[in-house]
Length: 225
Image (tube, rainbow, N blue to C red; front, side):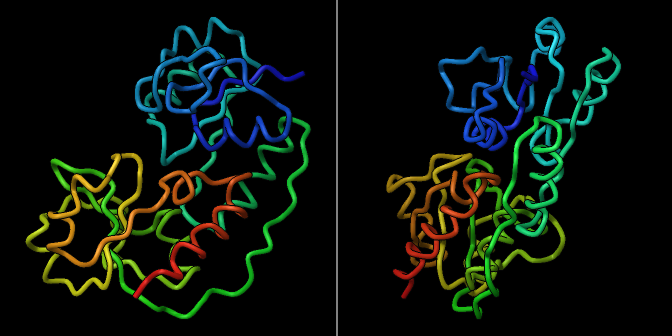
């Protein structure tokens, strides 16, 4: 069995689904039963190397280039994925499946739905950071008929709510991660537009979750006015 260290939460979930449980992962992977080797942005490189993995999996959107370079310099085999769109998922998953002797069934996602709403999607607070483009979450929402008001080629712009309020969003889609938006922020978010809370994992964790996430988010979005 391949010894894998996963530094990407969605990869950890996918590997587990395939029966290829990593020997270690990040503290954000929601696997308290596995050894944690730091976070996605601050992994313990020395410990990763110490574990003598056959493969370390990283993602260009989740992890830092300097950590990738340090792993390579330590002689560790690294698979670097780069998922920025719903259309990137099949290629990334086929690469991963090939390295761990698993099987990926290509997504059957159908045609994109017509645009029904324009959304502001905050992903952090103090300062406010928006989900922009290109980004997997924005691509997934676009497929479901929700256009992103930040569609200018900057994936994670820092914004001021007072300025966002003038951009004509129909809805605020506030995810549960990476910042845990909740009703405590409802008053300030609704200065922009009516607000709907959504599952951050369904929005940002790609891989084995993608098919069911599309269904759950599509059902949630039926509640849009």
